[in-house]
Image 1 (cartoon, rainbow, N blue to C red):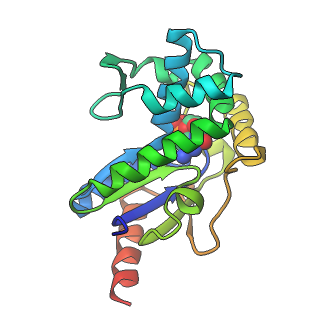
Image 2 (image 1 turned 60 degrees about the horizontal axis):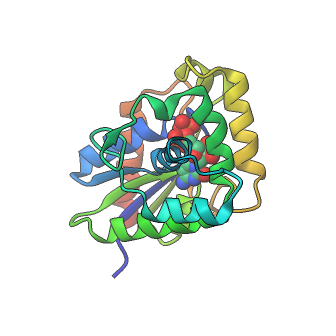
Amino acid sequence: MSANVVAIDGPAGSGKSTVAKAVATELGWSFLDTGAMYRAVTVAAYRYGVDLSDGDAMGLLARTVEIETLPRVAINGDDIEEEIRSAATNVGVSVVAATRKVREALVDRQREWAERQPEGTVVEGRDITTVVFPDARLKVFLTASLEERARRRNEEGEDSIARRDAADASRVVSPLRQAEDAIVIDTTGRSVEDVVKEIVECLKSHTSN
Ligand code: CDP
């Protein structure tokens, strides 16, 4: 019954979304950006006036708000594609992502979603290899130097990225860490095509073993 999943984790700007999307296209599988879900819940809290520090209310919001991530991020039918990248969202999302009840709600939704994918799915985030799909067919941890990650995210800035990294790595619930059996790929100076090729080849060799 376990879903066919390639799980990809890594810090901000490590290339997760771009690489995960391209791997999904290559395999003919679907793709899920779980960071967009945490960002969507953050924007929903701002819009509907839910206090980010109220864990119960935030958990309920995360369970009930309608979230679409593709083709554009939307909550309850409202397009929030631009808002999810705002400076305010970058700050709030670290608090939201550290809230246990929010994580429980979103992890449930991510697993249910994966079960519904007919072929398979590529899922990326911070806890996908360690918590959400520890039995994924392939687990990948993407990294890149802070300099390069900040260059890829030029609108956000190195300080904000470093702050989010520190918050993700140090939180009590589901901190960002490398799964022991993940393949680690440093994407610094490497092309997307090259990284995608490595992942697809790894998947094939894992599957044939
Ligand atoms: O923009 P970037 O790729 O850095 O981040 P994102 O994937 O959009 O995720 C935004 C934030 O959501 C991260 O900084 C994490 O705090 C949180 N997140 C998480 O805690 N767990 C996930 N599975 C995905 C994202």
